[in-house]
Length: 342
Ligand SMILES: [Mg+2]
Image 1: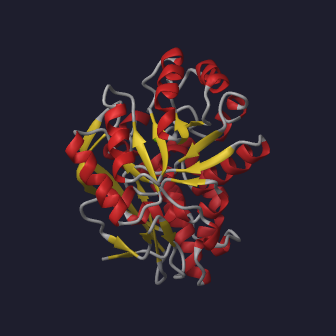
Image 2: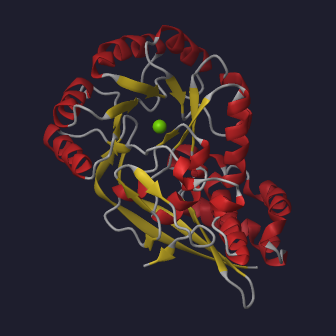
């Protein structure tokens, strides 16, 4: 198969700030694998600097895989390709995710079936997805919540972890009294502070709290969970399937992202590992185009919570074929990932 890729800047509609950092520009890398005289499979890498990835590390990781991919003649040899690339890819999870997505896209196109059908999944079973409200000034928050209300998102996920939490959540409840509300502290609290902050925010009727404490602090997560009136979900503490067993008892569920774990195959391993430990499963994303979201969304029927708004945060989404309407992800019935470059 022939490997091609392209680094593209992604622009968000609004500046998007979380407790850890704020960005206005990010990069995605579009990967295309094509067979001679055959269809092309597309995948997207959405590198996160928090996990040590940039467009340059993705590029280097893809070059490291070039030979394995160019020798491979068959996208159905996915397990073999993944194993061969693993040694070269190391921690380059988003690069790996892009390759795996492109292979699945290609398999679906070869068979004339959407990826969710190859996986035996019914897209109507996907949960509603939330829309994320970043940390911002009151009037910006109010405007974003109003936009989400107009778009009929039934669930909002609000970034917390600053002195503005109560003010932001009050605005959200004023503008959207009936939405389901989740919060994400992105690692910034210490365990005792997390317990008191969650108690202080509980009156806003929270569905769950994502990653209240530092990623490495599993005992801290356990401390918070034992005292928290709302469920605790691990995001930064849970990168891949091997992280799950030590989180048992410390959290109520985990958040899976393709760009964090390394793609559809690892995400499937994570879902099954979490289920075997009676943990709930959330499917999240980075800021991504519809190409990246489409790959994650294929797995949505398997999870309890979805947070697949990455493309909805973009000012310009170059791919079509998947849409979110009223918080519902609509997957395409077209073969593969079912997305097309506009
Ligand atoms: Mg999170």
